[in-house]
Image 1 (cartoon, rainbow, N blue to C red):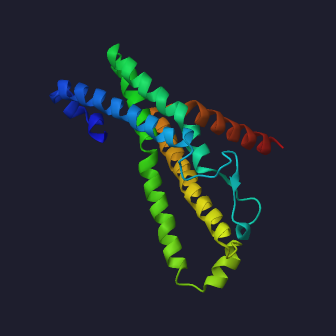
Image 2 (image 1 turned 90 degrees about the vertical axis):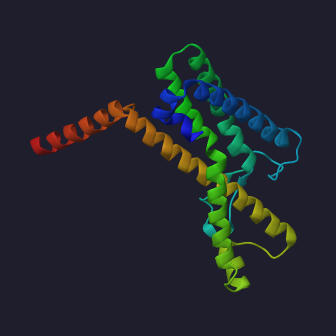
Image 3 (image 1 turned 180 degrees about the vertical axis):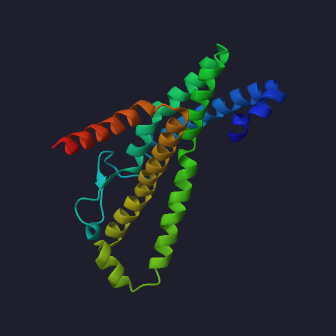
Length: 204
């Protein structure tokens, strides 16, 4: 997918770019539909209550995050919309808009790849914690020793990987929007507000 964004390759092999584009979008659609089928068939590794908020008692009552399932349902409309708009703008030969939607789809489609990284990071932290006294670790995170308690904590950590992925994806999206100039008006508004406040302070 990243090679689709290389301009020199697009210009040198336009037919290959088009064929690869349709193949990627088709596979993206099939992959997403098969993934969400796990939720519809109740076979996904997630909390039974989709709106449950995970927490680790030792980290305080404020830090809470949604279930694995809910985090993926949140991104679904944007994922499918970017597939549709990327294909439609390409067929309409509106290449300026096509490139924008293709970038957005790449960002959305990278969610699971990012989740693999965040999950590996959390597994690494868990492995490091395994060298500490078990009692201290359980006490710090507020996790009981019963199988049900540890299973609940494991579900929470699994879901937390997706929450971290959302943070990464949104940061990437903000970077791309800023680079494209979409945030210039917001930056101008904020800077003008700061300047007005500074002028008012000087007058006082």
